[in-house]
Image (cartoon, rainbow, N blue to C red; front, side):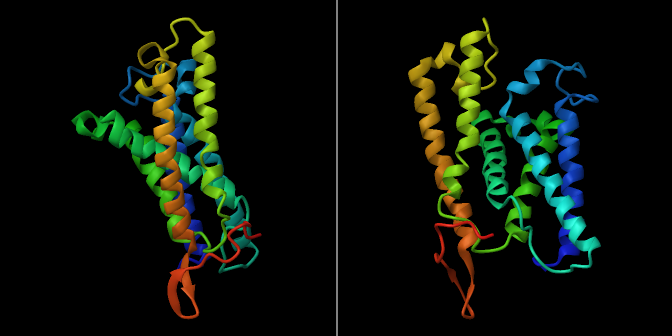
Length: 231
């Protein structure tokens, strides 16, 4: 089933719909339970929003490629392009999901589960995208460096927030662990270092899934060609 392009097409259509809904809600196109439907530039300082925008672009690209191949008569295969970029997005959006669950404690409040915005961009869109990788990506395709590339988006985001914080008076830091006013630069650095270490472990666990395949009739980890991404 994982090679069935029609199944992939159906799944990715659903994924794109949910991901697009998450994008709309992040812009507060209609009420998402977060203070009304006004649009503010501050939506662009939240890692949750930025990661969902990137995931939507990646999901749409995957859907278009899959649809094109099905329309050309193909019925089996895998997504051929942007494998490393997709993997980077998998790590990025999984970070969104896990940070909300374990650091921000939003799921402990009943309002979280009644808020379609929270459910779409914190939960449904991230999990559907990660499942797309787990269910349908071709095995033994990613290089050993892919998890390190997955650390680039969080690092770029931290740099982006630090620059804004240094340039804008009374900057509303989006997360407590990036708040220089409260944590100090040393505190922020320690938080970032700890989170990067966790994300690196997470990335390599996802990478190991890509390397777990049937080889010579047996399920095992195959580390051949780990220095190169399969074309």
